[in-house]
Length: 284
Ligand code: CAA
Image (cartoon, rainbow, N blue to C red; front, side, top):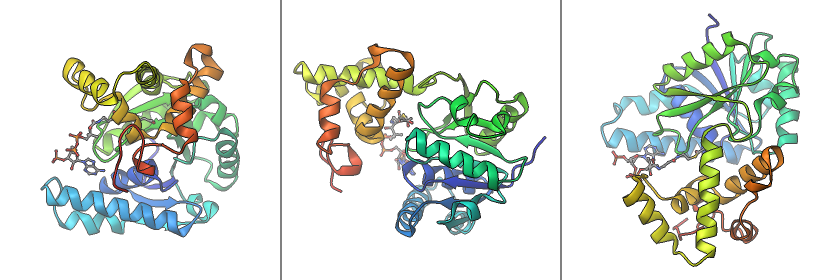
């Protein structure tokens, strides 16, 4: 069985820094790559904050904070970051052309046996695999937000992904203390396909006059959700939800069209927590 020791995470945003964190916590040597030093510094600061929070609540030993951080190196240069990796986890923005370009570059620079896992929440893995000469080594490793606390990871087998690579991915997910949920490779897989639809319906409910607070209260108290769909959109990012629906609409049909309110809020920059305002207001 292929032995993963070195992991490169592409992207230092909310998902990328979380993936780097949980991988380093499990003992992997990690390189987190992004295109600017500022993005990397922000990512490292978020990881430190999360580890400090866990230590202050007794969830990890205090010495684990520095130990974990010492296993994460950062890099701006993609080729330099990825050349020695056993596993590259890609968590760059959900722009298909950008991802395809990155997979082409990775294919050239990485070791022949290296595995590529995409954290995409909706884009089919088969398309990403097709950008490489190793589609059998490309799979989906889809983490949930917030990565440090969510126990499930969706694993997606592209049409050409090998069973052996899926086994390596399952073992990686187990090794970081998470549980793998296996999904078939159609746009949105399981989690985004279901959540995006519910979130889109929540937008329509707001348009029809329902208060976000009441929608969220109803789903918490009547369906036992930990947070309601409006608060969840604010957490994930309204732009991410709109983008996910766009991919579902393109691949699966017009019933996934984003609600006018969702589009309007994205155009207004009301993206949720990350911009300080979505369905609710946040102190940035
Ligand atoms: N790092 C470390 N600890 C964290 C953390 C972080 N980033 N974020 C939260 N926590 C901890 C808190 O400190 C808290 O710890 P205690 O229980 O010890 O107090 C615990 O997690 C719970 O947090 P809160 O009390 O702040 O709030 P909460 O009870 O609402 O729980 C939540 C937060 C776990 C996020 C919960 O609201 C939840 O499960 N929400 C749903 C999340 C979800 O559905 N995620 C999937 C989104 S879809 C997605 O991500 C896919 C995609 O691609 C779009």
